[in-house]
Each structure stands twice: as C-alpha cells, then as structure tokens.
Image (tube, rainbow over all chains, first blue to last red; front, side, top):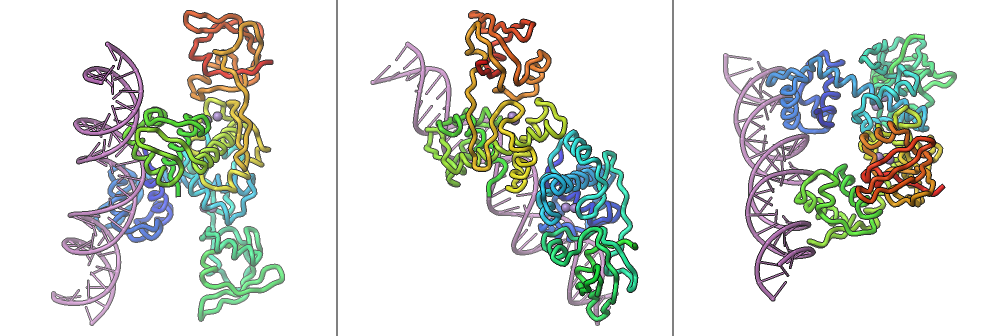
Length: 218
Length: 218
DNA sequence: AATAATTTTTAGACAAGTCTAAAAATTATT
DNA sequence: AATAATTTTTAGACTTGTCTAAAAATTATT
Ligand SMILES: [Mn+2]
Ligand SMILES: [Mn+2]
Ligand SMILES: [Mn+2]
Ligand SMILES: [Mn+2]
C-alpha cells in the first residue's frame, strides 16, 4: 500500500527531477511540498526502503522505474480530472488544479480508464500539459518559454508552467489563453520584461510571466 | 477543518442513529467502522469538543444539527458519485460503493453542485437510496423489507439495505434489480425464508436476503 | 588548505488515530 | 439486593508524518 503522502512526495520528485531522470535534493523537495528538510529526509528513507527511489546520504534522490510509474499514473489522473472538470462541469482553467490535487489520489483502475474513455481520450489537459495514456505513454511537447522567444517572430501559446489561480487569472484578464497568437515585439534587457502583440493590442509582460508561458513557433 | 476520519465517524453515527435522531452506542460505532471501542471513545470526545454531537460518559452519542449537516452532505456526495459511475462510466451497481467511499470526501462545493446538475439532479442512487439536494432536503422513501411483506401481494423492488458486492451480485445472478416485480408466495415460519415469484420463475430467498431487500406495494 | 556558508541528517518531541489490557460503570440475572 | 455479565472508559503504548534544534557533511570562499 502506498499512502497519499508518499504519492505526493513521488510526484514532486518526478516533476522536480525532469520526469524522474535527474537527481533531486532534499531542500528542493521541502520547498515544493511546503515542509521541512528533516521531514523530507525521513520520508525519502521510507521511499527508498519501498524501492521507489535511490537514496544515498547527502547525495539527493533519483526515482527508480517503479517510482516513475507511480508518478506518471498520478499525473495521468490529475490531468484527466482537470479535463473532466473543465469540459463537463463548467470549471475554468484556474479552478481545477486544487480539486485535481485531491482527485488524483482516488485509487481505481476502472475509474481512471473509464473516465479517459468518457472524455474521448484527451491528449492534453486545460493547461496544455500532455496526458499519459493507459500505458503511461505521452508526447513531451516542444515548448519554448516566452522568455526565450525571438524578437520579431510569431508564436502560439500552448501551455503554462505555473497553474496557480493567480497566474491564470492574470492571463485571463489580459486575454491570453491556449491558442492565442503572440508576436514578440521587444525584449527589455534591463529587467527581462517582454513587449508582445496580441491580435491588435500590445502589452508588456514581466520576466516572471515570460518564464511561465510556453509557446510554439507558428 | 474536519478530517476524513471524523467524517467517517459522523456518517456512521448518522446511519446507525436513524438519520441522526437516535442515540448510538460506542460498540455499534466500533462495529460499523471496524475499529475498537476504545478508539471510538477517543474520537467521540473530539467530535463532542468540535460540537458535532452530544456525548455523556456511558450514555452514548447523538448528533447535533451541525453533525447532521456534515453527514447529509457526505451522503449527498456519496450517492451523486454512485450515479455518475453507473450512468457515465459503465460501472455496475455492485462496483460503485467502494469507490464512492473515497470520492465522498473530496471537498468542493462547486464540484458537487456541478456534478448534480451534470447528472440532471437525480433523486435516487443506483441502490434506490434518495439523494439529498443542495439544501440537504430529500424524501425518505416508504419501503417495506421483503421479510415484512404480505403473502399473496405483489410488490416492486425499490432498494437494498446492504450495498455489498456479494449481495448485489447475488441479486444480479437471480435477475432481481430495482423495478423487478415480486409476488410473495409463501413465508416459511421455520427459518423465515420466503418463496417469491419473479415474472414466471419461483425461487426461495433466505431470511438474510429478505431483510435486505426493500419493496413497495404495486 | 583552512575557514565560512550552506545543505543535509540526526535526535528528540508532538498530534492524530489506533491498539491492548485493566478499571469503572451499567445492565442483566439470580 | 447482591452477583455476574456486558459495555464503556482509562492508561499507556505504537505508527505516521511532522517539527525544532543541534550535529555532521558538503560546497564555496578566501
Ligand atoms: Mn494541475
Ligand atoms: Mn494541469
Ligand atoms: Mn454506497
Ligand atoms: Mn448507494
């Protein structure tokens, strides 16, 4: 049996470690989970015992196959529920993350697979993130952060890094969403803000925003 | 904040105490939750502190208004999820209870109310039990246990007391479901078994079955 | 290479929920 | 009314996950 808490640690390590490929340090996990480093050390030992990851004192952790499997399955559930909430229950994209954080821990193979079918096997969630299929397969999308886009080129918005209500509502109030066409007008070297053009209107976004918005060349 | 465990205690007390109207003893709660009487005493003290119920040592407990509200809301969620699983995700009536036991603890007003609307405000769950509305209102259905039905009369099956997989699969394999017409042929005084007629076939059901099947006069 | 700063681990404590065993109260039986 | 049986509570312990404070290891700086 795997506990809800263990699942959350594994998921955090998966995301922090680039789909489980890299080593993740104690403090990074503590930050992501709003807990203390000492708690992380305790938990990480337990997860190593349970064979979900490799841990050597002072050397950080790396997920093993079984840990990645757990993580991918939680991500699958999280994103399918997000689609369900938006498509069927009139949630907006800034409302779904919090509820999905809880729904992702419901354990029923049949539930997740039937939900997947009911939604007609969606490939992306409301934030543009890919949804792993039954076998854990998914396409990592090629995305460029707005902060790394080239001046003069035209892009389409395809995702966000930050799924917080605050950030998504900021985008809403500026008419930026998935599919929005964005032209890069100017990059300000001084503070790394970026001037962009949407349809007809121009606006300046901060570095923080630019780092959290993903684009694809049009 | 109310914990998942507290919610389960309150729900059990609600069901054991006739919709929260009657006093419930420690051992009954322990039985229902597969726990020990000593654990129940501890938890019941906490629930009394939190004002969900009245507790006097050795006198059992009775839910207060706020406890009943909590219970009704959980029951509402449980039954709505059961409907969702059967109507939308191809679950059978014997598969839903276990999953609903987890889904009922997801805390989001919007989620439950939108789910209710999405399902077109169902009034009964897959086992014939009434679903409380947004305001906690529902009609207690008038039901007669098969064990108390009258020989010679004809009834319709409208619900079950026991929602366990075993019992529901027994009913399935004997072609008994909600809506099935049942005529009472004979009651055996010796073992309280009942001979019934379904459509054309006759069969004998045990007292245990008869107690767990609810009917309404046709 | 030595010292300082940072990161990580350990040690010990705490809250929630549970358990066993024993004591206390209630209820049933004689 | 006294005794026996049953129910409930208390006392103390254990597990999971958390915390603070201090010790140990690693990394950065001089
Ligand atoms: Mn999310
Ligand atoms: Mn998402
Ligand atoms: Mn149920
Ligand atoms: Mn039900």
